[in-house]
Image 1 (tube, rainbow, N blue to C red):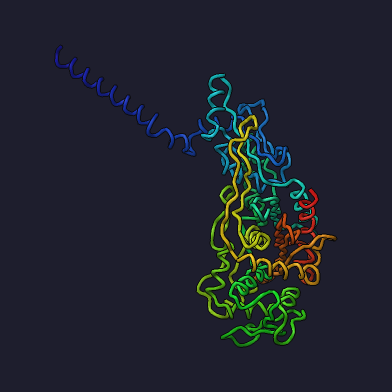
Image 2 (image 1 turned 90 degrees about the vertical axis):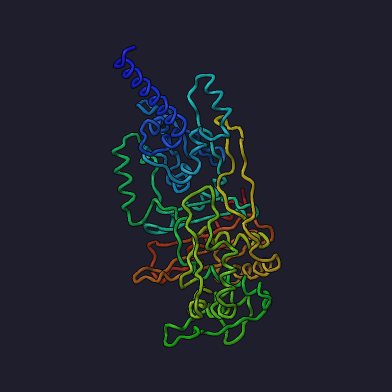
Length: 489
């Protein structure tokens, strides 16, 4: 073989080897990263055309894929859009959110637990179908929460969360304002872009699930945490006397800004029964208790309930509820009544009251009950787990006694259910922003002697005069309706 032919042959061989190496590298080493690359339109279009699994509440699909007569073959639809949108999120050509995102591998059929289903589909030459996801939500509780919040006047901004205290199952989760995910799942991509831009620019934040992703001062509902810390210290029980008085001056302060009052409620003059302080939500009592306990004890108790932590694994994004560190005495006093820089999600306050209902144990909340095949065979069922033992069972019993009396004789009376013992606490938290009215909160559980449901209601904004904003009057009836839906189910 002459030299030019030999040179050309060697060059062709090198090209062939390089081609094989590149093909091997792309198909084996880079395959996963290329599949997951958001710029890979082939993968995106294939996923968008696939028959995605259903998201179920009870036996009802709240998200499903139906045949489509266009290029994408299947259209993602949401039959009950507004009520469930904060939970389902949306599946669009550009992105996914909420359950559509966290359970994407199951719904798309890519989850390893669906291997047998994928194998059968491959052998029968059928398109790959996604698995289904069964949620823990109770449809009657969800209806009660949504209708109660939506019935408030004006453009409502708020949230309701209900938990099973014994397991951590999320029984209801509502956030207003909400949105129509069908518009974001449309096959008209220009329409999707326009709809998203409108929603994203909306100052009322309809795309934010307020139940888990927005924190606000919890106000007097946080007094449950302060009371828990006081009883856990060993210095108090439900029958003890606690600091009272019409006003309380925060340590190291002067002038009116350092004085906390009770807004006219009956809080005695010196020492008063603990039950009176809770029934009347005495600011002076709980500010004084917080300072008596100290910043470290308050921080420890708040974190035992879940503050400064993430714990929701199957729904995102979850904002951490905040209890500040390294507070000085004036800040510690304000924290005892849920002010200063204390901030909570509705889910967090539902966990606090659920822990009281569950002998002091905080259960890790979850919303995915089962993962199922396309034929609805159960592949995996979520098992409940403990997050912490926040308080002792005796402390929980004392707090229950105080909170039942608050419903029977105090500010939480709007949540009373005839013939059933209910525990509850109101909250009205100052926003700390000029011209922004206070936030109304309410937390409760029932039946107090055999708890089945714990509820947190947060009303951020509604068309209600500032002087009429009160957690009991606004949130109490909503919590009552949700509790009745579970108890009567």
